[in-house]
Image (tube, rainbow, N blue to C red; front, side, top):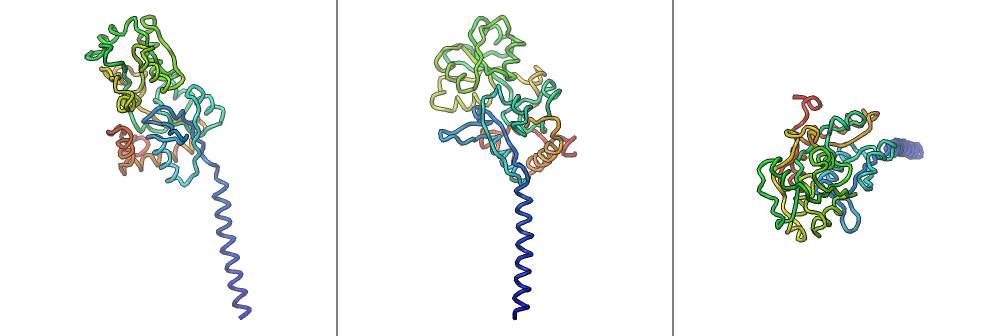
Length: 278
């Protein structure tokens, strides 16, 4: 009996060591640090209690779950996100960030997972809607006071297309831009279509309308081919693993499902054949 008991004890100790070793190994995997500005719904947003929500938050959480990695999300103003990534504070950024050749020169993107045009928005009483082309809207905006979030593709569009023709005001975040648009301190504003969708669906945003036409990569190739997660170039292993999960989630319809939850329609982009195969 003593021998059998000792055997069982040794077996128990062995199993405990194995399980304990696995736990230690799991704990040694570094957490993935994900940065966002938390103020760009439906991409990313912040609840009154400080929780991060949105399309990219849900998508990143699902990727982390599939990778069996712990992910920590942190928000800070947009203009400091890319410098913080380059300094090593974050492993990946998710913030509706457009994939552009200029950014790809110094940083690395995951494959695109969603794409939307940018649009101007204004009060319905401004008389700026109904334009059928960019030249027509451009003429109507001449001399106006316009707002845009600094450091975005929308600001690049303003600089390229309207420099010297309008008074431009820059904002640190989308919420501040929305407030000035609602208060009438600016005549119109430019952003990705998604935050305008969120604003016009809200009770306070009822006076605002999204202006036509859509402005996209087909007309202005510097606007990028969609949004992706942004990393440093030395993170090839993380990029490959993240992309692998995106391939699977696209094939399963999960990216489409999450985009429909947050945008109300499908904004997902097809799997990149160079990454996911034909």
